Length: 154
Image (cartoon, rainbow, N blue to C red; front, side):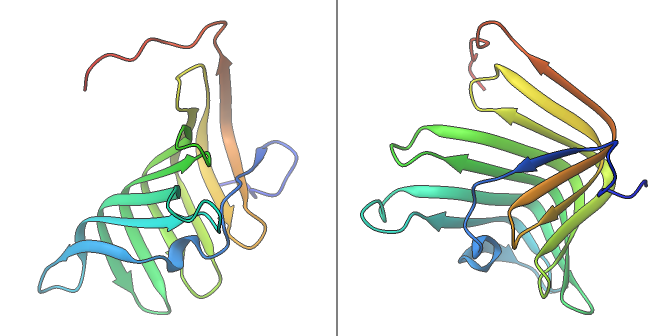
């Protein structure tokens, strides 16, 4: 993987709270120490404290030595204070350094708007929790639609 901080990549600033990964996690624990179908939700500060600001979910999260957390089928969603969905980030796999607040993977990542009007994807990413920056380092492609796609039932 190329250095995610070089000029060939793309940088996004995600407007998420620094305590994102410290939020309460709801999951099914199994005997091997990992969680299946987990979700972590962060709420806005008052006066919007009843409104979800972001939700992190995954099919599986497995703790590793040194404060690392291996996440499978990562999905990160952001929301506006009025409840409208914002951005959706998806990755099949990543490693999150809980101690330093850094998530990374040499694998694929897709960031899209909730209305489907645009997306950015690439291979290899680094997310720095402290300054809410997302770096996509290789094979970066983006698309902006003239009109949002109509969503069909899931």
